[in-house]
Image (cartoon, rainbow, N blue to C red; front, side):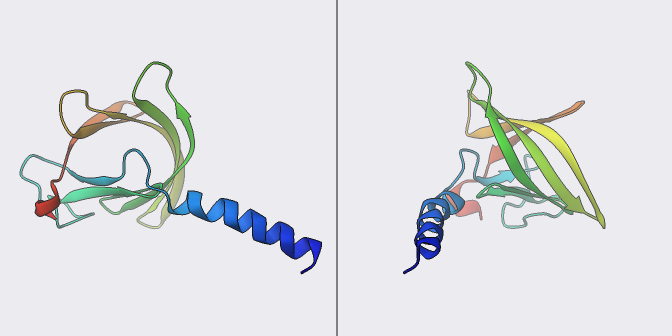
Length: 122
């Protein structure tokens, strides 16, 4: 094995587990109280966060460059989004709900609260 192949093997071995790791906000969340948890990405359904990707209604965003918020259970992400034939980048804050199994998602000027779907709901 050449030195180049050794470096590549080590880099892949160190990088792949991080790609497959679950994030702190991974899960399926209801858009509304009566949302169908089994319908991800549709109006009246739910949204999903999995392995650094947010799946919403007609939009998918890669959650990049996480920055922990000091003294809070919150993270700021650079969201690289695409949907309806467009791509854009925005910042968003995700924060766990201190009182229930849900999250808050804050975009510039907008704040949303989502309840986590239970295992039997999806």
